[in-house]
Length: 258
Ligand code: SAH
Image 1 (cartoon, rainbow, N blue to C red):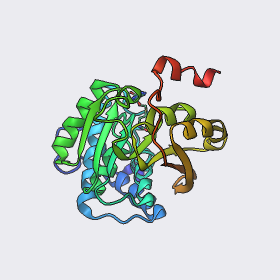
Image 2 (image 1 turned 60 degrees about the vertical axis):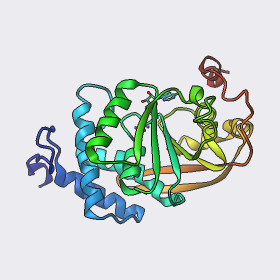
Image 3 (image 1 turned 30 degrees about the vertical axis):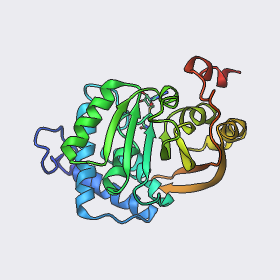
């Protein structure tokens, strides 16, 4: 009967495009249940409002190819919230590298208001949308920054300055490890959110992870509805990244072609 439900507007979003909120909520609840995550009504409402904003902005810029309510709830929101399994320390600073439409950073900032979340993306159109969205949602612990990770990692304000770096959809692990780990403090962690390709990507990425001053700590299996299995690869930074890393993009991009 679900398909007979009318598309409705969610609270406070009268100008937004319709989203079947009932279906979104149901799928989100089902997925969070599987993850063992319980949320209050306030954060759930904010997650829903953000879903509407993303779908609305998606008409103007390419933020996501997943637009059905169940897909958005499971593949974007619940998947982002699988990070709660890692129990980041109270008030940790977190950078979401290549955040795109704000995943996983925005859902994480909504449910963990104690964290300081920086949403980093190379595309200004996306960071502008995200800063507007954070303002509308009243998210004071979340801001978007425009820039390339491998460039910012050489700037004093960003180099080895975050407790945690997370990334999803940033390509091959050999490349993403070099892009992201220079942003993590010694003692901090990097988290790559990966699908089944982790098995083939990890062995050739180990030398890069080591050169960046990190080591593999553990892998956490994530079960989501619809038979989706994801993995969180947790890397621990135990030493400073050498000053010549990360390399410029012109060099990094050749990594996977070698
Ligand atoms: N994390 C999101 C988006 C993945 S798409 C998700 O999982 O849904 C990858 C995003 O990374 C794009 O928005 C792109 O602009 C950004 N990106 C790619 N290379 C980058 C780099 N070197 N530094 C910062 N952002 C980058």
